[in-house]
Image (cartoon, rainbow, N blue to C red; front, side, top):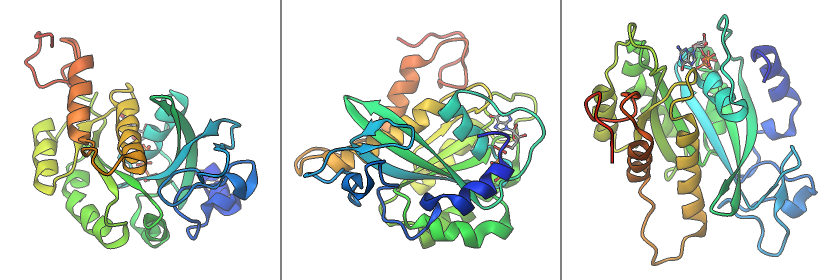
Length: 267
Ligand SMILES: Nc1nc2c(ncn2[C@@H]2O[C@H](COP(=O)(O)OP(=O)(O)OP(=O)(O)O)[C@@H](O)[C@H]2O)c(=O)[nH]1
């Protein structure tokens, strides 16, 4: 994504994928309807897997939406995940909605995530409402340097409850976690709120890259598990997975990833 917003308007206007009436499971692969996934994300059993717009094959496709107040870092998070870069410079607010695709390889299964980046500004709410119902997962962001964005999480959850699918995979992200001096929301506060609402939680930084890959991988794993699991298989525990992964990668130089006091290295 170039420095977004002009591109955003263009993308949402010209792309056939922008239609909110499209079936869950995402945009068709290049092979046309032959590769269109079913609503559960699986490619049709009698058909070959899809081909993403970048030419990559995939087995499963899911729609993920980024939501949260304007300026919390939704676009930057997506760009970091997709391109591994940080969009520095002056902040230009998203107009309407935009999307990016990324194919992940999870245990040999290719998962295409079609990630929708929504405008956080109030005036675009009616546009984004229409997209909720097709999303299989939502990443709800606040900015750890902006108390209002944190206080608004409850209102976002009400909105999600109203417009999204009942079984949507949801995760709360406290973004801009690398900032130390201007931080106004403690990690513990984010954890507490998430617990209250029974939502998995982690802090991220689009700037440093902290936990960005993990956030998307975790929801992709949950979606894959839901789409492929046998009836007697236990549920995928998203928060446990995230905690385990964070413990596994944490070190004494990265206090934001672990709950241990600074200086203690996890086993
Ligand atoms: N320090 C820091 N700044 C960030 C981070 N993520 C985003 N920003 C900055 O925050 C501002 C807003 O980022 P965006 O990604 O455009 O925010 P958005 O949520 O997409 O905003 P809307 O498009 O208005 O909904 C920009 O100036 C970014 O450079 C981060 O992790 N750390």
